Amino acid sequence: MGIKTALITGANAGLGLTTAKALAQRSFDLILLCRNEQKGLLAQAEVRKANPAVRVDVITADLADGNSVREAAQKINRNYKRLDVLINNAGYTPASIEFTADGIEKSFYASHIGHFILTYHLLDLLKKTARETGDVRIISLSSAAHAFGRKARFFRHIDSISSWSAYGDDKLANLLFAKAAAKKLAGTGITAYSVHPGAVRTNFASDMSGFGSQLFKLARTFMRTPEKGAQTSIFLASAPLKAIGEQNNGGYFADSRPKSPSNRDATDANADWLWEKSLAFV
Ligand SMILES: NC(=O)c1ccc[n+]([C@@H]2O[C@H](COP(=O)([O-])OP(=O)(O)OC[C@H]3O[C@@H](n4cnc5c(N)ncnc54)[C@H](OP(=O)(O)O)[C@@H]3O)[C@@H](O)[C@H]2O)c1
Image (cartoon, rainbow, N blue to C red; front, side, top):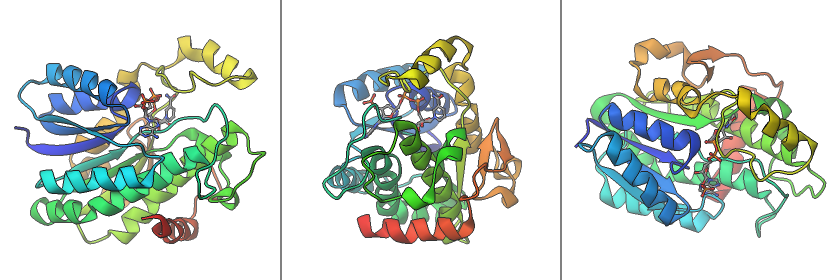
C-alpha cells in the first residue's frame, strides 16, 4: 500500500498515464479514471510495473456524461478512506463541434463540467483527508491556450464556434476553476492549482483536421516528451507545500513555477461566477 492516494482522470494515455507512473514510483496509490475500460486495464498494468507495491485501481466514467461521473464518484466514496490528490487531467481539442442534450459544447462539458461534478461529489472525502493530514491538492490541467478562451461564451450554444476557441474556453474554465476552488476551500487544508504542461507529444489533437492541426502535426518533432510535460503536475502533486508556496494557492503554473495568466477574463470575479453557474450541474 502507498503513503497517499491520487486520482487522475484521463489516466490511460499521454500526460495522465505518465503522471500516474511517476506518482506510483513516489509510493502513491492510484485511481485511474478512464472512459474506456480496456484502455484503463492496459494502463493499470503499466502503472503496476512502475511500482508493484502500490494499489492501482481503474474506475470508468465518461466526463461528458454527468450521470456516469456521479456514479464513479459514488464508487470512490464507497471504496476509499482517503484521497490526497485529485488531478483533473482529461481534456481534448474537439475535432468537430457537438452539443450535449442540455446545449453545452461537449468538450466544455467533459473538461470543465464533468470535472466540476466529480470534484463536488468527492469533496467530503477530500475534506476528511485534509482534516487528517492538513494537505490535500486539486490540480487542473489548463494550457497556454486559455488565452483564446472567452468567459462570455461559457455555457452558450454557439454553432459557429471553432474547435480552437472551444478548447480555449475549456482551458480558461480549468484555470478559473482552480482559482475558485482555492478560495471556496480556504481553511479546509485543500489547495488548488492549474497547469500548463508545455506543448507535449501525446495523442492530443491527433484527430483534428485543417491547417492548424497540420501545423500541430509538423511541430510534434519539437514537442516535449510526456515525461517532461508531466513534471509540473508531478511537482504540484508531490512537492512539499512549502516548495509550492502558500501564496500560490489557486495559481496557474508552468515549468513548476507560478505564471501570470494571459487572459483578461482570468479574474477572481469570473472564477466565482463560474463556480456558482457550475453548481447547477452537480
Ligand atoms: N499535449 C499537449 O501539448 C497539451 C498542452 C496543454 C495542455 N494539455 C492538456 O493536458 C491534458 C492531457 O492531455 P494529453 O496531452 O495527455 O492528451 P491525450 O494523450 O489525448 O490524453 C487525453 C486523455 O483524456 C481522456 N479523455 C478525453 N475525453 C474524455 C472523457 N469524455 N471522459 C474521460 N476521459 C476523457 C482520454 O481518454 P481516451 O484515451 O479514451 O480518449 C485520454 O486518456 C488535457 O487536459 C490537455 O488539454 C495538453
